[in-house]
Image 1 (cartoon, one colour):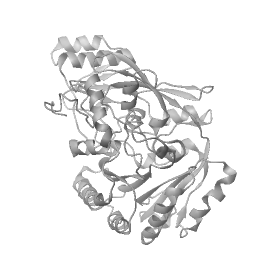
Image 2 (cartoon, rainbow, N blue to C red; image 1 turned 180 degrees about the horizontal axis):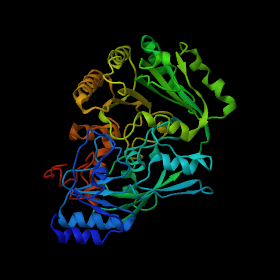
Image 3 (cartoon, rainbow, N blue to C red; image 1 turned 135 degrees about the vertical axis):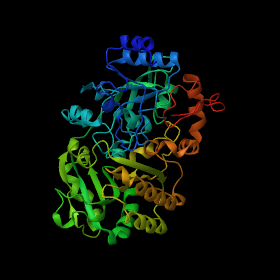
Image 4 (cartoon, rainbow, N blue to C red; image 1 turned 180 degrees about the vertical axis):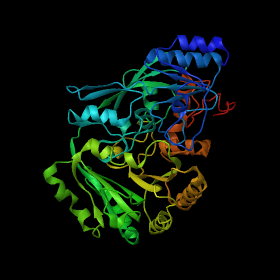
Length: 469
């Protein structure tokens, strides 16, 4: 690979560029969102179309080089990059095409949600996504897709109609309910185990102006707020979504100077129902202790999606721990308040994302996503710009997780899992769906070519697996 012939062969087969260490642009291209990930691939294929992806997959297969697939580069464990191998980089594939009559949007695999929301908002529509507009479409979708619209319109995968992908053999396939239905079942939550998805076709929903934003309370009010939130969100109208957070208030607008740098708890709301019914629907929320700060009001949906982008630019140090949660007992609330009050850095946080409402109306075996019966996906993240604080981040996040894990439902949202957690959490996350996923993996990727991921090992490879990067 490092000696001319094979490099030149791959380079000649690509319309996009091919980067090696030392080339201009290599250092930028190898970086991912999580600055804690520092890997140096041997080659980066900057794909501009499906043909480039096919050429890259076939090259990696023929040469035996390890391959990683990068979409938006947002993955918690940095699974869009590997040491020494080939990165198949889709970040230049950002086409978005809205079909307003059919209420669908086709999105290429390198898009971020900000680009999708910009295109669909012009038509007064959206598909469920995450909470940061910089998040990559591919990783979020293949892992399931939680965000502001989950309770009203379900997970992102519940709005996925079809995918185009390049298989481990370098073949182009379409998967949908009618074509390759087993593969379509697997990609809806099974991660990047089954191919390089080059485009996604989504159903769109009517979403334009939403009533949204954060409410913040002092930490001493956190037990009361958590108890209210734990009861309310289980039976709230599906038009209301809200995720709970422990946070440190950023020093800037819209927050008043009096609460800058203060550790607080909060709920970030998103209401997508009729505007004239907002206050009536929101009335129970007004029964909580009066917040110290409120910034809930009408705004375009893309404004909500991008609200937290400036706080979390690419390159920060991130350490993640996660669980699914069914209930918030008094003891769990006590532990949350204890550890949530000890945020180690200003950007560290804990979120509880609802997984109910419309997401509950889909069967646990209808897609690869197994935890349809969970109420929340919990994520504990230590975040800071300075690598010198990494030990503080990891110690706090692990202690928090270890304290709360006995109160969890088991398993975790794969998009929140770090790569060094091992195989057992992956199996726990898919529960009874895991064996079906293994069968599909064995059929479509028997050599475990796609293994830089939350890996589902094929039957043969499970006994004799190659080491993951």
